[in-house]
Length: 144
Ligand SMILES: CC(C)(COP(=O)(O)OP(=O)(O)OC[C@H]1O[C@@H](n2cnc3c(N)ncnc32)[C@H](O)[C@@H]1OP(=O)(O)O)[C@@H](O)C(=O)NCCC(=O)NCCS
Image 1 (cartoon, rainbow, N blue to C red):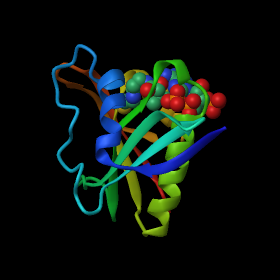
Image 2 (image 1 turned 90 degrees about the vertical axis):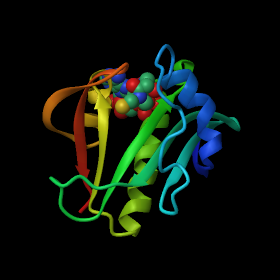
Image 3 (image 1 turned 120 degrees about the vertical axis):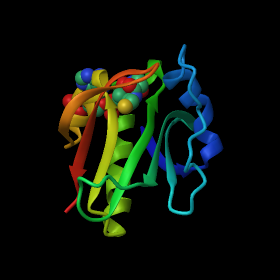
């Protein structure tokens, strides 16, 4: 059984580092981690933190309405495919809808696109490169 809870920015760091920053010389601490409107979610299995994600108030001009960006979505390798990512997105959507947010978007690694499609995101625009990380698509989920 996996439980989703709010966690602190610092709680996300170890899993961000392990899952998202192996051989990638980019910061695992993000601008916005401590902003007032930012929140972080953790997925717990038997009280062990197995996945993290962060949600920040961040707008793109091409989208309308109130927007949040999903960042730092990461599940420990040995827990992939057990529903942690899905449950974190579900919980975030509940929280964001309760705050009248219109759009949740992210820069999705190309390899993660099928995961986001399953969570109701759609691809927006062309493939682009993020240095050191590789090809990405902007993806968005309308919350209304
Ligand atoms: C992408 C990631 C966060 C998904 O987390 P997860 O906890 O394994 O995802 P879930 O178990 O909730 O998967 C939900 C669904 O998506 C599917 N899925 C997950 N990752 C997938 C992938 N890479 N390709 C295809 N399907 C995928 C699962 O099979 C599952 O399908 P189901 O609902 O039909 O059973 C995880 O694979 C990961 O940490 N990857 C490495 C880091 C990364 O790429 N992060 C995203 C950066 S944008």
